[in-house]
Length: 482
Image (spheres, rainbow, N blue to C red):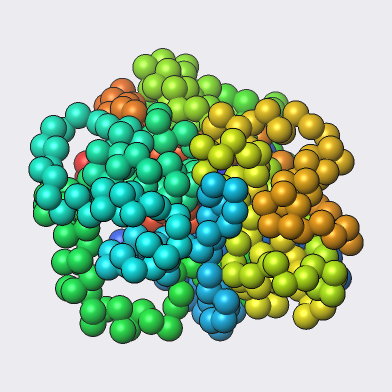
């Protein structure tokens, strides 16, 4: 009887857990006997997916939702039997705002998806001047840039839509996703769809109009889901269900087990055995490794195997952020709070990046008599505020809320969640460096990288990349090339 193949997944965030599930499913489908172990340095699973329940409040320390337009998230939810727990954003009060020129201005509906055809609402909102709106429309007439070289996200948006649209509209929306500086971010790595539309249609807006027309049937099918969705008990329910499923499938799950180093040995040409040296002095051996750790951790582990790959991965910088949850009695808030929240452009030089009125955006997050807010600070170039202690940080956020939206009430609950070196930054040349790292690592075909550091930071991106990593491992075991 053939001995089972062994895989060790290092990293117990959503990427590592999704990889382990995909490994077990694909191995079963391909008839590959497999034994899988997942190692997590910390004592909790799920990485940045952390839900807190405080009496009737539900707060998310990390992400609070995921995109329904990327199928991997919804597919995993269905696979784990959680579809009934999915919740849409509230149907009422679907407004979002941007703080611009001293006050909150409503963003036209559909802007987050950048749906064209909203000229009237654009003009009324005051987000862009009349000249700024006209400049956005020039996208229809400007020639496409046919260069294959990388371009910063800021340069790309300014070139297609103008400086005002970038500074007042697109930059704050993008900062909320990547916590990055658009002047340094790679357009190809962060918003590849925009680049593809320019190349295919010569215009972003023309391409989006064509895509919207072609997708009318699909849109009707997906209409029951809002763009962002969450889970009624909180997103940590996804992690809990994953852990349960993996345990039932015989996956070994070990938390509180930091990895010290990797070693490699070979007893057969082109086949390696990987030794995972743990900080407690013990070791595990495996036929294949999946590294689902942050890039700077992966770089240190890989450096003895391939200094080139280690050096390239070390070049992926990370930004630090914090989320601050505040709860208020609804009776003292007044009528100044409406919609789902607001974003703040960098050009406004405020310390608050964004705020979400969580209890207005999501059902079941707070009792009817309370307003739950979630504030976001930090990110590339804005990290100085994180030097404050928790008390001072809350006071600074409260002052920002008072100045921006007039919220001067005293919160009845406060919670600070810090995420140090948590957000990978896809800077110019990011995809080229990834290709070079993969070439440098190609000698060790049984070593596979996955996670938010590479090709997508969202939950569905991490799930999708985990499935692709699993496919590479199974193909390696089957004697196929990646």
